[in-house]
Length: 434
Image (cartoon, rainbow, N blue to C red; front, top):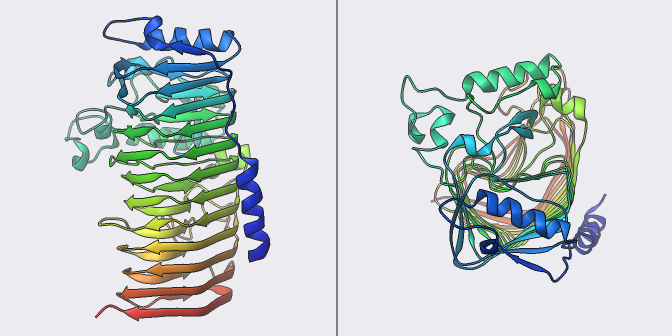
């Protein structure tokens, strides 16, 4: 796929990923309950909407404390301006455990706050707020670091995370990988799993326990005009994983980890499932904080291809990388056909373009991932540590990497290109910082 073909493909993808349509039926949440807790009202309203053939569940202005919200086919959860869905901080309100992924490994765990499994034509829309209630007192301390409220003697997720990785490596059936009650693997905010025709539009998301929007093995996903402010641990903004046909447009990310991270399963579990993530378009987004602006990986095991990024703004105090392709020979998989153009960078603490096969575990596995056909053009960068850092393996170099028609000013140190074949740097200006 050359550059002209790539952007024609991206335009066709943009036209193909359309929002689901819903019948003009409206079900007011307040008609299904009242009081201090709205969990049952959400369940009843969504069920009524679904059983009627679909439509919209309206959440009017006000604050609605609730536990897990599970969407059903043909239902739009419409959160009006002035409305806040305030999620409980009690882990018991996210039980029974559901089929999910924690850090790209399948298991049964606490329900994501808004969850759907095997549904079609679902949406979360409106100008209201989804508030996860997380902070150093709730959820974030589970990560086990003092920065986020953990103190010696408190439990944390390390033991459970080790156990889950061990189960995946040993081939333990997913239904036996049971966590939830008594465990400390944090749930995601929004997770449609094995769904088709998914829309998340307009809402504001704050204080999530972990990843914010995490579609898994979904097809035809549209995320647009969403604003996310959540600087907790592992608080990725949007992580399409093993999905096909995804458009992320017009969003603002101010988060505690990667703004967008394209993923495809991890390690033995990713190989077992074997589903790639492909056909992802990211456009007109503003990435402000914290690690990768657009990350690909670290979970690449099922393979990632056809990722397109255009007209985005990257940068801010505390934002690290621009395009950040990160994997290693333990994770494996592949990454191919990544195209980036017309990006404005107003400051990154690290590289504008980083493709690094020594990320994390380094070169300690037997599955070196092929990375090929990475194209970056039209970048205008005001300040970075380096313009690019490119590191392949001697036996598996990066291939067909092109950076063209770009300007990098205020660069602090020299660029790195190690074990790269067919590297093309053309019409690129790099000016060091004074």
